[in-house]
Figure (cartoon, one colour):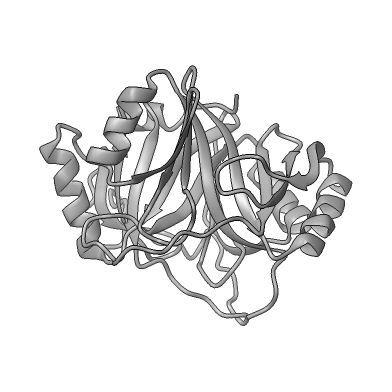
Length: 295
């Protein structure tokens, strides 16, 4: 597998209007654990070895940043150079991070205002035993884009990602063997579409979905199996209108993977997933996928 300067999606930072309610939802219902606390802030881990996969801060519902893991300090510096050459602004220069998990990092704002953090040397936790209904890491973040192709060029030229597939409305970008770590979705505005959490198996998606339903959170879309990435999915809307996804079995690709275009990703009329069992996405879910902007 070729080297990537950015090697993984590590975490997403969200602002939520009720931090205590967010903790209850994302721990007791969604299935994460508390990694650290601070005044008005909370860091949550999955069962894998990332120190945290979700950071929450008190405030109006918004996405504050997306954090990627860089291959090292040299790679981080190279990415800053290529990203700024492609129009990104350096918001925070490379420096030791004084936050839970630590490490060495920097923050960029891309030409659309997406706040992207790069970190290397951050702390790892001792991974828990895989749980049959709990996420082990983040799978991907889906970002809304007014110009998908321009944003894709920035991720590829500026950050070193590679295009995995291009459907009619989305570009799927990868930074390791997973089919995608970032999905760029055509939309009338820039912002967050959803955050996807990786589950160990497709049955884990179903068991996790059952726990959400039992807690009073109906499935917002799914279950089903996507086309690009071949991953099983079930979507939900959290108490603050943020769309989150359980997913599993994302396609693993090699260096010889050839991206497929929109003509390849065509379903029979009325179908929204490979299996043909996912119902049409409800209008309320579509609205939620357009509601969260970068703070």
